[in-house]
Every structure is written in C-alpha cells, then in structure tokens.
Image (cartoon, rainbow, N blue to C red; front, side, top):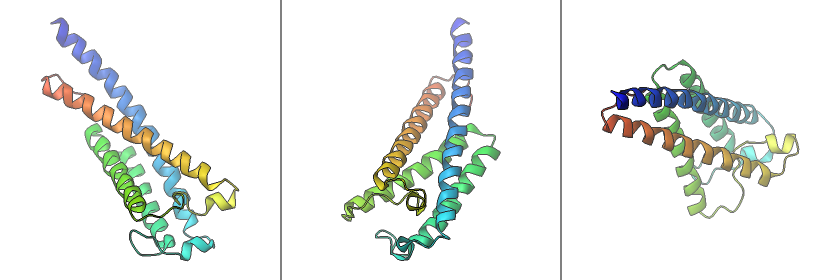
Length: 163
C-alpha cells in the first residue's frame, strides 16, 4: 500500500516536470523557428548560398525548418498526451543532431547558421549564437532523454504512469 502511494506521488511530480519541460521546449522551438522564418525573408548573402547537407539554399532551409519548428511548438501546446509531446521533442532534437553530425562529417568549418541572419542584424557574434544553440540543444536532449527514461521505468515497474 505504501509503495503504491509513493509511486503515485512520484508520478505526479514527474507529470509536473514533463509539463515544465514541454513548455520550455515549446518556447525554444517557437523562438528559434520564428527567427529562422523571419531570416528566410532577409537579404543576407548567406541566404543564397547552398547548404552542404541538403543542397538547396539556406533561404529555403531556414523557411522549411522554421515552419517545422513552429508546427512542433504549436503541437506541443495543443497535444494532451505527454508521451506524444516527449516523442515530438525527441524527434526534432534527433533531426538537429543528425544534421549537425552531417555538417561536421562533410567538414564544414563554419559555425552553425541556426539563427539565420539574425546574428548579423543584431550584431551577435556567430560563435555566441552557435554556443547558445548548442546549449539549448543539449538542454532539450538531456531533458527529453531523462523524462522518457523515467517514464519507461515507471511503465516497466507496472506503476500507474502520468503519461
């Protein structure tokens, strides 16, 4: 009886953390998606250069990825199933890691252009923007992996899960 009660209390706490994390992930995706979308309409030289991974212009890449990030941010706010929300975050974070790995593998020494032309517009050094985006990606990765693994343990133990 006591372990069942403790399990329910743990799950409620987990549910709260899932909610906080999903809200923060949604905010990150909304902001970075909006910045990419706005940047895609800019006049920066980089927008006409071609991405080494996909082979189309950065303008097209920023526009497309910006829309995807905004769609995921909206879906995170609308969805009521926490497991689906965590899976959406994991999917997008995985896509970003795969893209970064491909860029690294192809030997592109330039910093990630994650924020489009915004860094030039508001005079943020590219390395600062790159480090900020890498920090956000690490935060999202650790958060989603931690919460998904915690919920998997609850399910494996046969506990009532919040997801």
